[in-house]
Length: 203
Picture 1 (cartoon, rainbow, N blue to C red):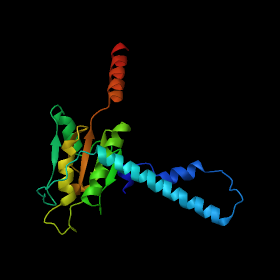
Picture 2 (picture 1 turned 180 degrees about the vertical axis):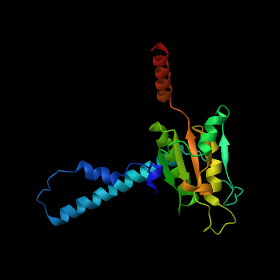
Picture 3 (picture 1 turned 45 degrees about the vertical axis):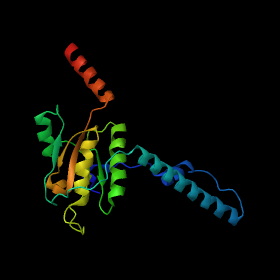
Picture 4 (picture 1 turned 45 degrees about the horizontal axis):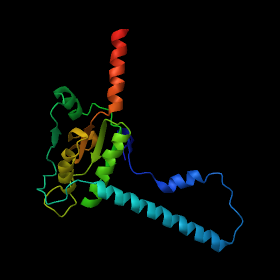
């Protein structure tokens, strides 16, 4: 992942979290067989939690999975909702907003990408992010006659009300193989802007 376009937003890495929680804990003197069983149990618990999280994601995920007309690998995509200012959208297309997080879909199946896109946008909203990027690739290595993941991303993003606008990225960020996404401003951010505006008027 290119460090210039932010860090990836994914589900918590539970193995890393477990390691952090266990930092500084002294190992008890125990039979090797007991330690092995405990380690195996930890792995089972982590796998179970991941499976449960995926199941919850799937139940909530409304992104469509039906047949789709495939886009050309170099097709430029763009979308903006009513109310998005032209100047704002122009700056997004020019890549002038700082990218706060990225998701790379390379080598994923359509179903894997569907889950990841849904979770990525949801987590980005929780973190009050405004400008993110999804790298979907151009589909050159696909046996299909078009860009499969790109086509589905182009279908999915308008289905998510949190997405205010998106467009193909600038060459340095992937060009036609990636999309800049502008997310809806959270209520927290809206209130911060109102407070900032009020302070500036009263000063």
